[in-house]
Length: 438
Image 1: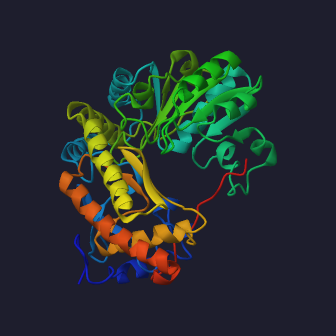
Image 2: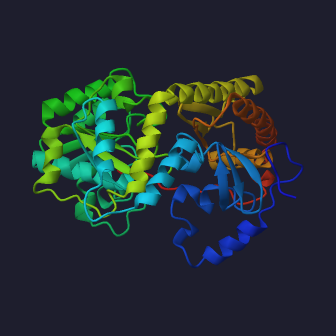
Image 3: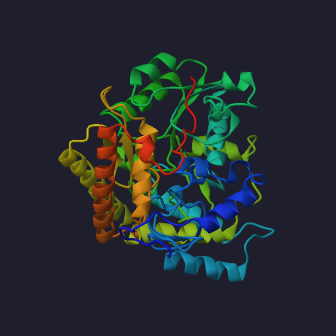
């Protein structure tokens, strides 16, 4: 019998998931199109591998198990699965056509909508993935400044200029790797030392779970102005979540270029590069960044409907309320249990649960995370380490998630005390993705 959203007697049956996995094993590299969704990021042998359908904040896997989803497709579902306004807009546009031989009016309407709700935006370009637009932003910065060097603080996708700074850099020429330097977040002095006359831009995620220190973003703005470099905000996560104006509005710091994707179209593939006309105009001149599917209309229709709901229903306020309750509730449980090796950090719309600890805690952080994930799955909660909350998450969902955490953390606490975290896992623990090398 499939498990559901309650304390289940057994871990979810995953027979159909395993059969699909075997079909994919030697067919799809890594068995997934997004590493965070793949089998290495879930307790192998316990977690489901394939989801079949979703509604609101709930999903059902191919074995019929139901879960409260705290991961939400790794972030794109700002409104939840199957939001009626967005789905209706997609269906209506589907009747009219998906892609055309000339420009579609939706390109103008959605660009105007973004310009109206995001401060400082004067021009807009659409694409499909976050890596597309972060790479385009770097190219604009290089074209505008005539410089080559890039300073990066965060994660920006799979393209050569960025991924060459990580351990998964095979295939990236050394000459390309040498042009980008990865720096620690929240360390303004490190940027001050690194930025120079050859620096084209500083590109960063404005929030990497821990909030920026007071004056950090404003300090980056001043450094870029002083040294003639562009400041680029990669707002894949913060855009349309911290507010309609994203991190620029939330922290009152203006970037030269901004990039968006995950929250803007409630799951449809759309990414955005936007910014000041002075820089963006290069995209219509010698700098080439055009794509066949940038004007695909189903995603644009979804974005138009999504932004309207985000604005009219004040969705960011809901995301903060739900996310803050999860963070504060988790930390209260940890305090009550006396757990010093785990905590929840971040801003409401997207928070992260960390695992570490003093030397006295002889347990691997990924194994601790894996044990909590395993026990949350048994209670019908799909959790990968993050809280990607949506408009579909309710107060009762928070209450159930926190009760599940209370039970799962009790299991973890007893395992840590006994030195048996790995022994209590019923499968292979979550694996690391990569690390920075610069």
